[in-house]
Image (cartoon, rainbow, N blue to C red; front, side, top):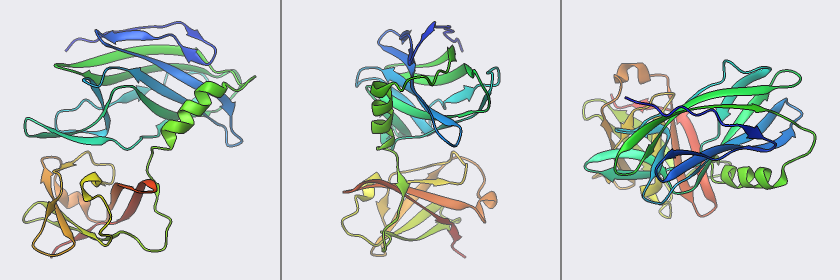
Length: 261
């Protein structure tokens, strides 16, 4: 497996665009604002045609996961991607979670001291007819003298597409039960207006992928077949996360996973 290694020169508020495939380029953008909790917002921006894609935090059956390594940075702590809701794509019988076209991935950066310098190495998949694992190295001095309004707005717009915890009185999701014998996740949907096709389920920090939902013989229950992944005995006591799109936007509900005895 070959990698393309790049070391772009950074300028205030953004790094230079770097061509990573024949039709895709990327850069980092920065809000240049330091919050009271010691964090700042940046984002990975990818410009690519609709025929190309990159992957969600659970990349799917064939996807390449994003990895971020900032261990060589100065006065920089944890980097936390803020993932917009992806689309589920089934191609040649495989399920992946992807983003197509121009895409912005917000990243929260913990700043731990003065004159922070981000030295970031990342690996991500950029795919069209073939999938290319791209390795990029970027250095950038973080400056908070003046807010970069344009970048901050674009980062905020991407965050608006990120699922937020469900905060309304009645939950559209009831019980979530795993049937170990049939290797299926059974999700109870209480709201007939919910777009069931938008539901994506994840288990704790697992990257196990589930098939698109199918109606079960029980009204209001939808079955998601488990596709490969890890053994399920470690799932007991884990939370299941259900993300979905509502008329009010993307939401997430997290609750303890039950098991069918």
